Amino acid sequence: MSQVQFITHFTDKISYLDSVSIALEGGCRWIQLRMKNSDDTTLLNTAREVRRLCDQYNATFIIDDNIQAVIDAGADGVHLGKGDMPIAEARRVLGRDRVIGGTANTFNDVVMHYDSGADYIGCGPFRFTTTKSNLSPILGIDGYSEIIKQMRERGISIPLVAIGGITKDDIPGLLETGVSGVALSGAILNAENPVDEMRDIITQCNEYK
Image: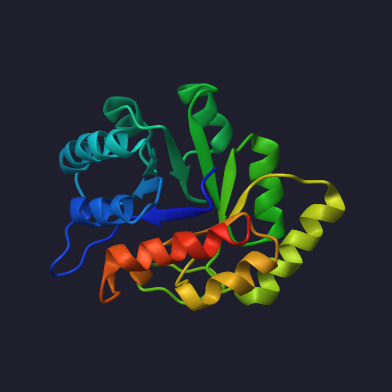
């Protein structure tokens, strides 16, 4: 489980594939391909290219939502939102060898995914983010601290990754709450030098291992 996950996005100058290359070159070894409004053909063609890039860097490749694309592109796993296929059903389709992550906003969400057999949880949002519509209530540092506390009290042990509008300056405080890692997108692509920004964040996170 990587401490830093990259969620693909695009800008006027950076394509989805460019964003993957930037993250990999900067040292990230966990890529989630998220292309919400793309058709299946475009998603699959992009996913096959991302698979090739991830293989070059020995990186884990996750696809957002689309189980069939995971199978067809040979991805390592899927990340499922709260409105997507249930995790238990995805496990029946994908088997034990593929990674399945789930989105959570509350402790009850965490329990649900844990009981369903998720491998990790993407928990958020930390703050408002423009990369996602229908945003759940923001958590902030206190929200993560409370969820981690409840997990420990219940003996629930599953990697929990913070996501949603996170910047480099937020990471020390987040890791101190006990989260397993952070997922980033805009913080990398909007930086003056995205590759260097990713390198700096990887170094920063390594200090908390």
